[in-house]
Length: 141
Image (cartoon, rainbow, N blue to C red):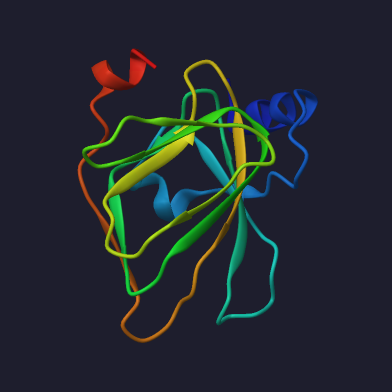
């Protein structure tokens, strides 16, 4: 299925926020397809809607110098901190990922997922992208 067909299918399955454009800049750090829509004009407090196709998810990563807030708006997904069990996420869930904590997040297998992401940008703030999630472990979810 082409990206535009996937986008239309997600919108038809209850994606409540703007799906946005293909998340090409971060594609090397995701398993599966994702889309990104900017929701803020404030460069100091960027707010994005991230849409994940069925089963798409980030690689493990760390936010240095800032926390990240995720607000789940549609679908079903997971968040996992290193050394902890994955936690299931549903619309309405809000999680704050502390700075310097290795984690991943994304759609549950067979489900689309949308979350709003908020984090600061600026001097001393960065993302460290790490290894992909073990797909054998992911498929057990």
